[in-house]
Amino acid sequence: MTGTTPAVPSRSDATRNRRLLLDVAAKAFAERGVDVSIGEIAQRAGLGKGTVFRHFSSKEELVAAIMLRMFDELVDAGTALLTAEDPGLALREFMTAGVEIYVRDQAFSEVIGRSSVQHPQVRDAIDRLCDTAEALTARARQEGIVRPDVTGTDVVLLLGGIRRTAAPLLIVEPQAWRRYLDLTLDGITTHPGRSLPHPPPRHLPLTTPAPDHGC
Amino acid sequence: MTGTTPAVPSRSDATRNRRLLLDVAAKAFAERGVDVSIGEIAQRAGLGKGTVFRHFSSKEELVAAIMLRMFDELVDAGTALLTAEDPGLALREFMTAGVEIYVRDQAFSEVIGRSSVQHPQVRDAIDRLCDTAEALTARARQEGIVRPDVTGTDVVLLLGGIRRTAAPLLIVEPQAWRRYLDLTLDGITTHPGRSLPHPPPRHLPLTTPAPDHGC
DNA sequence: GTCGAACCGGACCGATCGGTCATATTAGGA
DNA sequence: TCCTAATATGACCGATCGGTCCGGTTCGAC
Image (cartoon, rainbow over all chains, first blue to last red; front, side, top):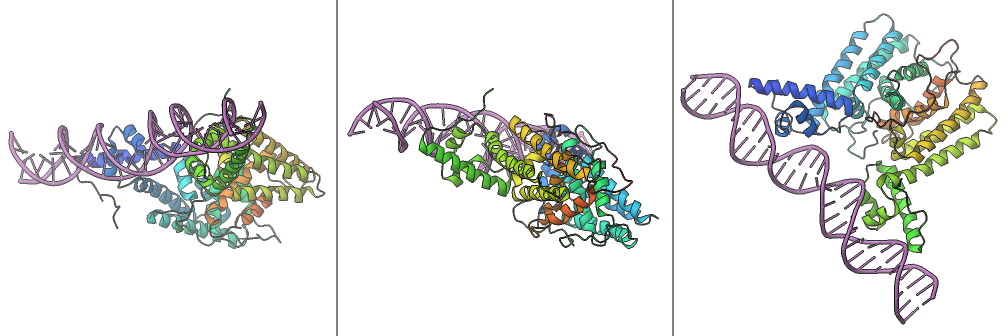
């Protein structure tokens, strides 16, 4: 299996350029999504296109490197919230942090919204994120705060849905997502006597190489 | 202002090919989204690429022609439901029909999810859809079934969110959207003493030619 | 200072896209 | 049947993309 990145560059200019590329690419992807071309990223970094492919064997590898940082950031935030006193508030803060990342970074939203994710490390990161969300949700479930049939995978999926719901408003109303986050939170809180029609998802099926239903 | 389509073709083969193109393109866009190339559509119709551009002055025009049919379909369904006895059930059926269209047709989901929509007729259709949704929502609001600060534009936006939430599951669980539709319906039902943080959207701001936050 | 390996840059490649145009074909009234 | 205007065609164009490659440059150990 090839496709790996030169682990750690040895020369000083190489390490400098690698960090520069990661920063510039992260900003570009956040602003305009994964469709930003490698050429533009190289240009914005003041480097040549070849240099980008020296540090990252493909565009997917560059995207993955950046996304992994953000996944870890969110997983860490969720893990920290596991020790909070109020499980309901902890879940709310986790979801707030999640939607904030989705709103801030368009590429992140696109990657996690894809029905098939090729890069194995990204798949693992998504699984870890679902596990963290499940741990937080389980606590809130035991307290009777959220419905008994809502899972952590539900929560992760809902983050993307909230972002998408607010998307057409974001240019004019950058905070509109808070409205739909609250609405969603009210939806997943306990509704006595009501159960959801479809069985809850356990894991995200990300291995399918089939046509992409994402958006 | 140019860009209009030859109103109605006069020759028999022209009208036949126009209908054929609309059918083939509708199917292709539904399956794989608006990124399907004109070349492939022409091929699947057994026609030349030039023929497509004879009937539709640009790809956007072809997409709009197909989307308008679907918008009207949904608006008609909503209008019919305005005379239903149970306003709550009517709203549920409207949203069910809406999400079903979003799930069935990937291109429809992409077009309405864009933050900026160029084609004026499509913009009008989206506005009409919001108006219909508002009429249905108003009835349910007056009955006290849905929260007082939920608007028709909210409802339209939520349709896209539900679809996006379920998107990664749809290949494996084609009916998973029903779960999140119910969850959303529970969210917009009356929650005594709770109000939403951000002011409700009145119209969809579709005129911004700025970068696209869609997805 | 010297030298080799690591690194950089940008011309270049093949594929794909939306869209155009000159030419060939055909429908259908006279 | 014939003639012409409407229609169909696909080679072609320019732009853009991810990715390659090789000649020139630079770092840094000695």
